[in-house]
Image (tube, rainbow, N blue to C red; front, side, top):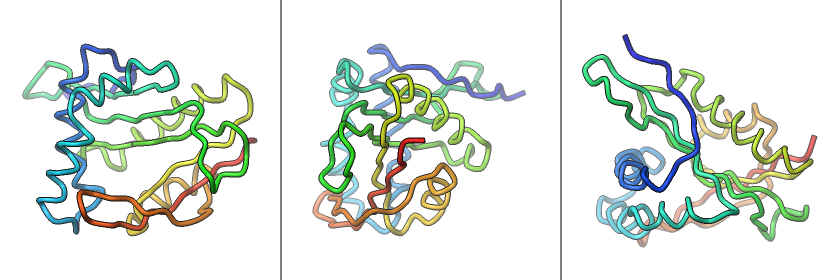
Length: 179
């Protein structure tokens, strides 16, 4: 039987596994991107050293979800999310907004409620500091993710360019106002 995923804060011991998982799922967010551009982005932005820097930054929390599979009883990363506590963005009007920087799941967990559990965990982290505006960037063609974020109270506030290698992509900035 597959165990339900558990969510916890990543530690420095997780950097290699996080890097490998991130590299394995990043392409899902930009399916039309050329393989060379994907490889360049992954090499530059998703190596273990990047995850180590994120985990060691006191302003950032990396959440991960782990689960064991019937064929492999060892816990494996099946999702991760990066939360930046104070991440100003020119199009976000409120002071010291938090940013939900990444949220990636193994496709086997799409529709399972795991993404919602990660967002709930992330909201609990930032809401401990009082009412904050939260923003994120999402690929403009990822309608599933946009609908998901809208259910959590995010709204589109403007466009943003995102580079994957040399591929210029259009993202939407989304903001969730304090409740």
